[in-house]
Length: 342
Image (cartoon, rainbow, N blue to C red; front, side, top):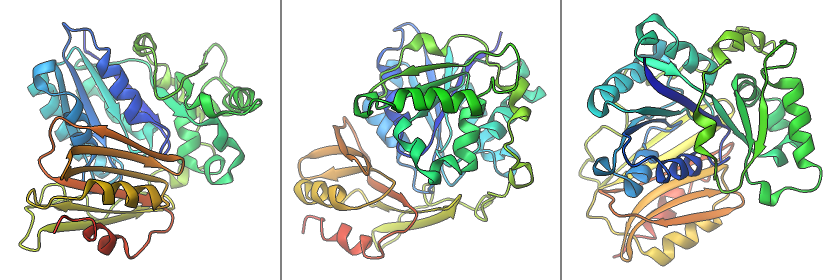
């Protein structure tokens, strides 16, 4: 029997990381879990966020695949990271979080190949959706957004505490038309609701129906399904490079209609907590994630257009931050350095 494996997907800023952190917090004490997390940008922030909450002594092992959709380059970066993670952690459960701009269908197909057939047991695929976004064509016309819903065994309407009266039903209706049971008889897809990523671990249990029917839902985009290749897929990413004498590394990426820019800073650079709080609260971006060494401890940041969530971290070897938006402010770097303790 293979390792029970769940894909937890959803578009930018919907709360995937919060959901995984909640699941980790409620992990059975006697189990070892592994988390493979994929990021659109090259900097690699999620791993540091997860590590700041949990570490190997508590039975959770983390591995990152930064730099774009993990299924690119025939899934090679993903397979290397996955193989290493399985070897090191020997987990009782594996959670995979693709980037919000990645294609979960291709990830599921990689995991379904003969190589992994006896290694992994593909369990429920969960897709988080903010139902308020269903009125925004930037979401509903986006191939990845629709593929995430099409591939899901269960759709979770997250941030339900912020919904208006008709948002729940709008999500149910959208899933009925775009979900994995649309036009496929006998396949059930449940829609449930949550806030702050607080989801029941019972949702993880059970075999996925995703791989058997995902070909029904290419949404007429099959000719474009792998147009998101990244030119840097064969070079060292900014997350792996040594930090030069300048004290920082900057990396940019673009695809799927979005751009990212991120920085890594040498450990000796300390940020002013008050100033970095203010900066991240004022920047308009689809999503911001960061971990900072500050004059008031180690802090993790997870921000969307709705606001910033700050978390005290137990550890943080260096400061890292990533911004994703359709357009980005060219002055971000100077604003970041203005927050450094002199």
